Length: 229
Ligand code: ATP
Image (cartoon, helix red, strand yellow):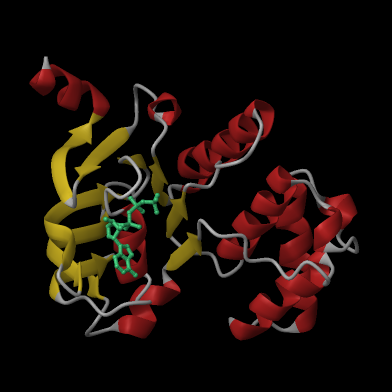
């Protein structure tokens, strides 16, 4: 699936009452690429994620995930999607296992299959030994990694992360970025990584620069920098 269009956003606009949050946003992200959605606070990143995950209905324009229109074919489109929201979303009083098995059940996994996959994924983020710890006993970076595991449970081929490293220390940020970049490299998953931190962009990435609800530039970082130069 490398090179296939993981996400295609075409002429998407959205307003909250009179406040325009997105105006004619178009871009696409290929499978097998790490794409950074770069924008300051208020640029419209969270609004875009809410539309892609269908928390809000798209008012104008269209969004396709691996060619499937999220309005016309929502269940198939959303099956392909994993998402890590900006807000913390673990239930702090439940164990890691409980937080994750609940979601695995929602995705139709049987108990044994769910546990095997949970342990495998927790292992890849260095948390297999924390399975029965309560979520509240984890650090911020560890919680984020559990949320990433949860987003990956159902084997999505497009992963969205909204400000996933906010509030984390330098080491935790670097660890999470490395984990996600490895997924892109090894599994060919398409990633849209929303951030306001330009130092999270690397030379080989793709970038979509969002400002005031509009796309200023998009494409491979080298091309965008040359065009701006
Ligand atoms: P942040 O990282 O701070 O969430 P963002 O880039 O994700 O910023 P959005 O949250 O999408 O930006 O906001 C885009 C614009 O829409 C902003 O001007 C914001 O004030 C406005 N906005 C967002 N949500 C609402 C809402 N529920 N009602 C009214 N205006 C909103």
